[in-house]
Amino acid sequence: MRSKSFIIGAVVGLVLLGSAFTFYSYVLAPSQHAESRQVTLYFANSQVTQVAPEKRVLSVEVTPEAIVFELIKGPQTADLFPTIPQGTRLLSVKVADRIAYVNFSREAKDNHSGGSAAELMLVYSVVASLTELPEVAELQFLLEGVIEPSIWGHMNTDLPIPPDDNFIAR
Image (cartoon, rainbow, N blue to C red; front, side, top):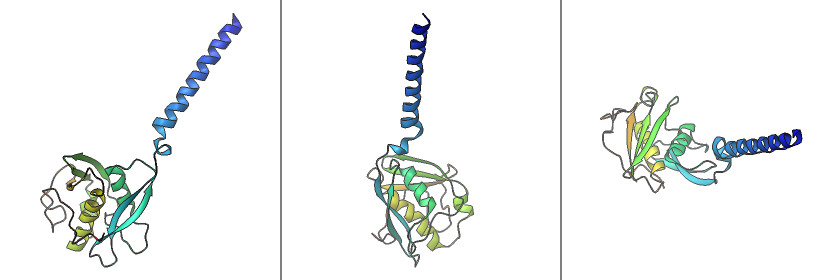
């Protein structure tokens, strides 16, 4: 009787151990299973007149959130410059009807260096990077969940913004 209980206990233990391993592998560590994919991110060029492309390989699922997180990290190429102010947090991204609603923390405004050129670089780096995804055609900026008429003071941000090739070097 003891050996039968021991065998049943061992089998139950192995099943639980296997379940825990499977749970960890597929739920807690999904990036290990994500297929690496190259994306194009856009950062300010050295003249701060256009956003220029930087190819980057992501080992996580390529989503609008993943793209914005990479933009927040900044460029890896020496002749490109970050466009999103330090300390900015991405609060959410939602895509509906091919419009990406990108919700930044207040630091996106408070820590912005100012000026129309820096504003254009911020706007079009996010617009150009996200519109590389087939599900996104335009971008609506939100600040702490609110659509503001002009977040940074030089450009209307109360309507969705499409890509503008005048500011995007492809």
